[in-house]
Image (cartoon, rainbow, N blue to C red):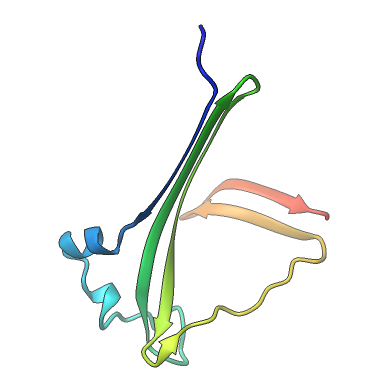
Length: 105
């Protein structure tokens, strides 16, 4: 098998697509009271990024989607977290641990 080396990256703003699919309330009068109790939030932006690279060493593929919240009065800033010490991390789907590890710096 002979394959060319390549790298592909894409970024897509999904807000308009989600609104056309009928997901409007998250961008307007959403109830995110389980996320924050201080101020009402709404989603301002939903972005999906994808990356794939194929080379002599193999293939790497990553896709991620993130959303950006704003307070009704302005942009919301998430609390600061500085990981300058060892910590445990997990990626969980419902009650199933998909990935876990320990960062030791």
